[in-house]
Length: 357
Image 1 (cartoon, one colour):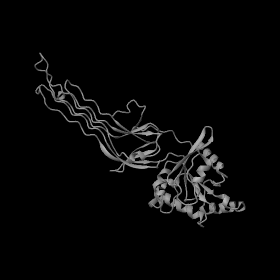
Image 2 (tube, one colour):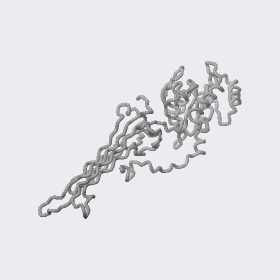
Image 3 (cartoon, rainbow, N blue to C red):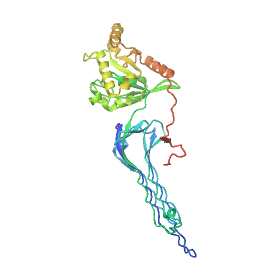
Image 4 (cartoon, rainbow, N blue to C red):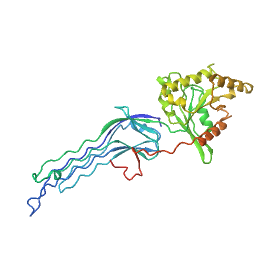
């Protein structure tokens, strides 16, 4: 399936039904009076996170969604039926942005979480509400109000604990293949990875974490060069970044300069990413003579003045990769996230009033 992580849709909530102007007419009741009922409320539009979806590709074919209109009021003071809500399923990790204002409406990060993005209109009032001592036969009613209509931009940001970043051909895909069951394409040319991949690393029976491999970054990625600008946002949810660097690049590039270039792109795209825990993985150690590995690694670490953990690994031979996984799990065990706080903007499919307006 083609990976789609952005989509623009148009949503229309249902209008409220109109109030009814009616009078009671029955045998032996010559002055029955007004009995027009109210219109029903229009349906709302909801987004609901579904863990069975992993891409926004469905929105390439359907871009407009409408909730049902409320039914008009009827005689005998009968109110119209409310319109049915429109529930749109989206992948877990979808952020919703109003395109007109750029405002973030919400972030769906849990299965079953719901977000109302367009409220249905209210039903109009029937003429029964307008009777008085001086107006025994009112013909006044009110129409139903219009439902909200807006254009939304959906952005899917992968939910991963660990994010891999680095230059093309640094060995990120090989690393994720070595430590998980993910099978991204691997080849000896740049930009082999064209869309993100997720892999689950299971350290123990009840301990695991999710790792994300995004396409390689190059200089200018934050401004649109290469593929990185499309996928840098997937790093925003990660709790730990693993910076993969080729110890012995065939093109003669300096590993230190490559790290500095990536840091500059992160700072331009989102400065908070630089403040996130980031470890250095000096990859492709199998291409460096064993007697020279420590010296090469020490030079890179010293030139960078690197203060965070760093590792010498070979993703191709899996040398050192398990030590990285164990260290990552220890990091997560020592830095457990705070419990999530309920947000009143959201509901779940188990809420009693989940379909309310």
